[in-house]
Amino acid sequence: MNRTVERAFSILQLIADSKHGITLQEIANEMGMAKSSAFVIVQTLLELGYISTVQNNNKKYCLGVETFSLGMKYVNDMSLVRQCSIHLPPIAEKYNKTAFVAVLNGSKIVYVYKYVAKNAKLASCALGTRKDVYATSLGKAILAFMPSGEQRELLDKIQFQALMQYTITSKEKLVKELERTRERGYSVDVRELEDITSCCGAPVFDYSGQVVAAVSLSDIYNENLDDEEVAEELKEVAMNISKDLGYLPKS
Image (cartoon, rainbow, N blue to C red):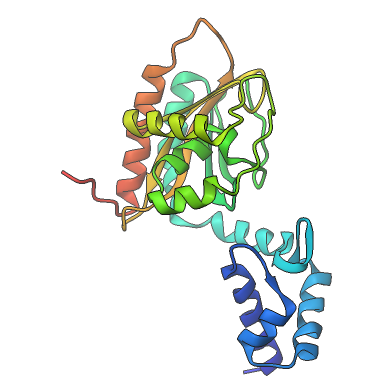
């Protein structure tokens, strides 16, 4: 096995496992190698785009866009997306909406699947797009069903901004909305991310019972429409996807 290649992947894994970024000195310490040797590998990964510096802190490193690109190629064949591609198109077509699937990445959600119904009015958001977790039905569906400790830790990191008139702009208001989401089993976003859209979302669980993603249905906002029926049906679809991933609901 090539030692340099092995070290490069080990460093990449170290960076991937670091939630808040990692410094060059920390990498060298973890790897048990000279800082100068670590620098050569880190700089190469940086120039290739597999890692980048953390926003507002150029001393720490996080995963870069090229790593995400590789991950997306894998995602296209992963079980989650495969199951969503089976279950979501029928409900999207039934209600003429656009279906999305997203996973959590820090305090953002990343869109990993999209299905646009033939008569849907909304087709925004390309795959790979990142959005603030607090301003989307997808993000709120994931947040609401996270373990309480992880949820609190993530909420403390969110920097709220009024993206639209109806965007939630405080931790206290978001906590209340997450409580409502957990009670009814689905989330909503009514003109919070974009002024013209409304969405409902539902959590997806894996075999261990952990929330791993969320699904949503999005459309142009219409004040005369009551989407509770749609949301309840989406909740059932999300549960079916979860079961196909090995999730066993508590009786």
